[in-house]
Each structure stands twice: as C-alpha cells, then as structure tokens.
Amino acid sequence: MNHWIALDSPESLYSLTEKSREKTCLILKHSTTCPISGMAKMRLEDHIDELAEPLELYYLDLLSYRPISNAIAEQFDVHHESPQVLLIKNGECFFDTSHFDITVSEINDALAYQNAQA
Image 1 (spheres, rainbow, N blue to C red):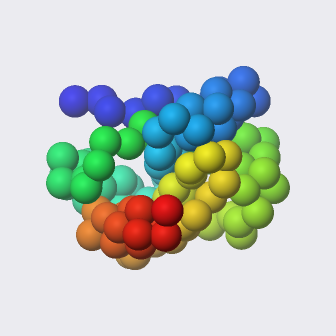
Image 2: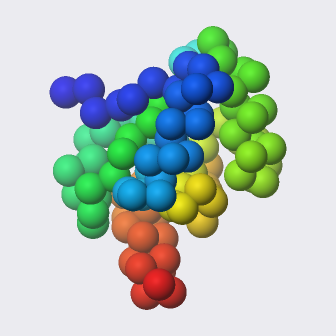
C-alpha cells in the first residue's frame, strides 16, 4: 500500500507546510540508489501502522528533486542527510533523524515528547 504523498515541487512543499498547521507531517528524504536509505524506508513502511498517531506522510526522491531537499533544509533549518526523517507541526520541524535511527519507535518517542510539551 502506498501511504506517501510525493514532494516534487515548491508547491507541494508549501502544501505540506500549510497541512502541518492541522496535522503533524512526516517527511522521508530518500536516495533511491543508497542501500541504507532503502533499508530505512523499508523498515519504516513495515511498521507504519504502529505510529502513535495518524500523520501525513511525504516522500522526497532526493536524486530527482535535489532543489526541494535544499529548500527543506533551509526552510526547516536542518542539516541535510540521507536518508532522513523530519516531523513538521505548525510549519516548524520539531524532530529530525537519519540513517539507522529512522524507526517508528524513535518517531513515536518524538511525538510523545512534542505532545507532552503542548
């Protein structure tokens, strides 16, 4: 099942930012040629139903849309990594992680912490 919304234009990044004002959004920045990135994506997809809350799931193909990746790094003030997951709420990134730390457990911990701060 495809849960992902493609990030493939400046307009899609704007839409994500606006959507994050209503619902937490997750961005997966993925390199289609990197085995570590492939494994991180597969592990995330295998456990996506275990997320603590429903999220809007966005997918960025880094090789095809590098300018969008650069815009994400600038807009959300995060260092670019690949693979990378970012959680966006109210137009701001409150969590990012990369490589082998991309797990549903880490995401759920970040969501719990964010919700406790609200």
